[in-house]
Image (tube, rainbow, N blue to C red):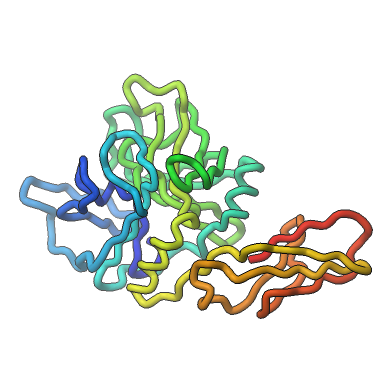
Length: 282
């Protein structure tokens, strides 16, 4: 749950097999709850909310049990469910840095705990982030490494992937598929694939606007730095996506440390040491 009235999941959890059309019904369980038992006539108990609208990434079609490109979707119920536990989305810079460091990220889901062994309650697992591939043929994805004894299983699709740093929880995206030890026979390539939420801003912004939340700007464009007398003047163009939502910019040095801030599209970094310097803008 990303906002009180928005849920992020895998698109294949919401689309009918062999189509790009939505399924007839979805089930959403309260955080930490046991899986409810379902019958041929539907769920036990009355629903407290209804799905008002849904969005999926362009180009997704549920045509295979293998991972399909752009497997990412958002649901908007017609009422708030509960506060979100996430501080913010992980940026592309976060993902690249954590993948390079092999940082641990958390998966939480309702999938099998072993081959043919279901679970009624949610469980979590910590895995190293092994790659971030925003230009993949599968879309904007990242991967985590598994072992024969530790990994994701069928039923975990659509579950959140996040990283804790102090008291902050950064949402990376949702798990969409894996070659896991729960398979029979198990795969030799024990890799988990997830959709990176930040790569699907058009989908997210459509949902945010519909639900009445502020939209998220894209990345600044055409960043340029000009050095002169131990200073660097950094300039850029506004992002293409949701530029109207911007309230300010941060310029970060190569270590990721804040160097200067601006409300316009230029900023000067002073008192630099001799040498080479690099900057990013957010």
